[in-house]
Length: 373
Image (cartoon, rainbow, N blue to C red; front, side):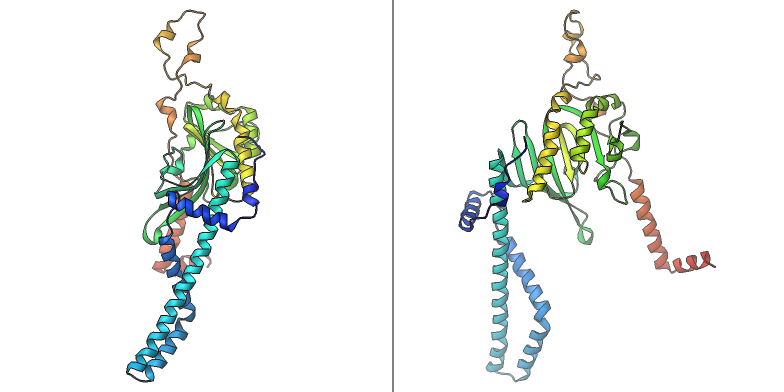
């Protein structure tokens, strides 16, 4: 992948007839979801909003008509306004649904053309993507949307991702943008937690890691990232994150969280990555391009904890050293980081819970009063 890229499909005026034909072809081929469910939901929402705005007036009118008297005329006076109300709701719902459908169709049309112009392929959705990154094993209802995949010079995937946690009133939808880059050989599990996107509760990542796995690197790197690597793999992390690679991450990906796991590298962000914004694509393409040419060095790494083949161990002196001929892979202790407990979050939540409980018991005011006497 190289920059600059062709952003014209994101900006050119849309041909409405071409968009409609494109959406129809997508639906006929089964690549796009059907819109019946969306239309029903939109219609219901429009009806609810309409009734919230005009419900009291409509109810007053109906009551007045009923008070005019019984009989066929009175019933007719009631039925006609109800039918008119249903017709208005149906027309409004259909109009809004067509507007939403047209907006989605144009988005699909632009992203598909953008993908083709840049040597990639667009997919509307990928349910429960089989990727090993930490965000892809969380919650339920997991789906990636607006996925763009390229294979040259290596497999790269851009997408938006969401999953849900909890249930009922506590149900929460989590949204991420991600970039997945396929490596040629597995590497130790390493996480770069960007400090710029952390909150009061600490890291924004959905997983926490044992603090004993933190590794401090030279220069300003620690100001931008907290690096985690499996214990015993510190020297390997230093081999992978040389000063020039650290500089590239700081210059191009300081706002992104990074995870290396198995033979993948992921960039994460709490925003849409697959978008119609050319500036976002320029930023992401630059971040990927900045590290692509360094992957050859990474892929020469071998885990000296893995035994070399027996034939190599007994080779003649002029044969390449066994360490250079070890098979690609990572020993068991380096494949996954040890998860930690998010103590900061638990303490803050615990304080709020304690304040709430004391308030419910009516003792919080008494305690504060005693402190300030």
